[in-house]
Image (tube, rainbow, N blue to C red):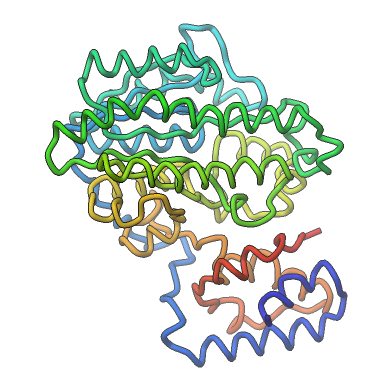
Length: 400
């Protein structure tokens, strides 16, 4: 109850002193229970060590959709680094002469294509192989053709990653957070046709080959990884987005029931705030704060962080079996399994006090009081996870 009051305080009240006292009460409660606290993650860029150990997945094959940029590209690169043959699928392609245009990625990212992602995999040392596949995820025939090609060329399919996502071009700025009746059908159609229906049809086409793979390779457990977000649990950005992500989570959980007898696992991955090409470009243009609701992109995750999480999971079939059908937060997996982001940081989960207090609560208290909070408080925030029941009880506070 105390945490819910603090998180909702920004939206309902303006009593800075009361908020400060509530925060101190919470702090006292948490620090008095050593079992409830997790070790604090590194917070500076100096002296950090990259603890990630690249697993050996050299015999495995993956399809990654939405892999020309962003999280999909980060995953494709990390699976390739681990030695997998990766079919890099996306609409944006040099061969097709098409570049996705819903977001301005800037001149330096003019070649965000499947060919570029495949080239980067093939330039790595090791056995990883990138195969570029121009693909419209909303075209069922193209999806079916891709899986048939994988079957013909490799005879197996160990992992499918559904990362394709889009939004209407005219709703990619602050309007992404607008009221649903103002966004209308275009937002719904975009996020559901690509992000949800596209994931479903990709799974429909891929599962028969994954069943064959599980039968032929003793001990193998193919994995379907759906890229979701905290929007599946709590209000985030807009109505259509949240419904889509909740649908992705339900797709993972329900597929797991039917796929268990075939030794195929599913997982819904929750990245945090990710420093994608599009988000970084929005920040350069001064648009990120309004579009995100004031989230700090500088402390965000790299696209590779999600890739590292998935590669680590693929190397632990007992773990994927245990977690099949469930949600897994990338930052929480990193802490549990002991890997870092590429810069050596271990970003906190969005439902961690280490993310919520510095990102939302502290700035508001300082704004209301007109004074900086003491460093003993701001520099020692515990990496304590809010229970999903609390985190899901309402939207995060606005920073404006």
